[in-house]
Image 1 (cartoon, rainbow, N blue to C red):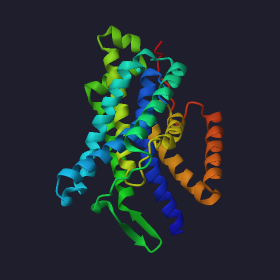
Image 2: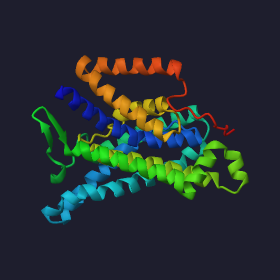
Image 3: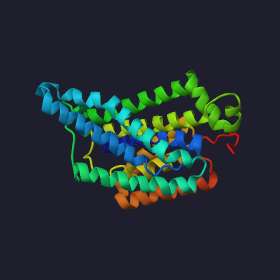
Image 4: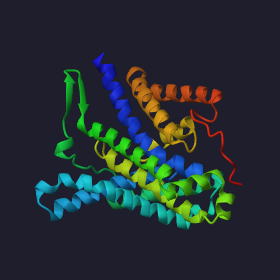
Length: 301
């Protein structure tokens, strides 16, 4: 019985990472109709930012300070990934809004470029030292232990979801983003700079992926193509939950994370992934707009 709960806990931590990544994807696609295949590389950027910050601590600060490097890396990863998002949005993405097929091809090319650039700079494999405070775990029984690093990821995802929810519901920027998402033409008519909102939203989504990359360093190594391991599942989270729906991202992210872990344990990794995809396909046959469809959306044409 404890083994099942251990699998569920591992699924929740995986789902928490998927939620962090999918929140950015959902916001970007819901606002601008962009299928961003390079979104996984912002995860990679966040992870390598964490690695670089830790190396700076090792080189220039006393050894006892090294644990603080990870926590400092969280906001820095957000900032660096956001700046890369700004650069890509200004150079490429802004010409492709509401053109999903063209955006898919263009961002796939950007993805390949970023992966090769990271490989040339950092090599094929690096890792980050886990802070001492996040090592070990909370032992409930002899067969059920909740690792502190995965608990931290769950709390981090919860905190970022709360931040995004409050941003969308309580701030002027959030109101403008929701307005542009619902009706771009009318928003422009009332004085909202839709291009500026597009830019800020893309930066926000990229930054969330950067934070996810920072969190992933707690449970795995850093490789140039690490984002590819999460991008497909994150798109599944967006589609299953409902495009542009924050609550849908949480529900589908946790569901996909938990069931993926359970299936992988009981049916091996490959067959578990296939079974998960089959269940999602069957679900979308009956709920093509996801768990939380947007019934009041007005087209952006």
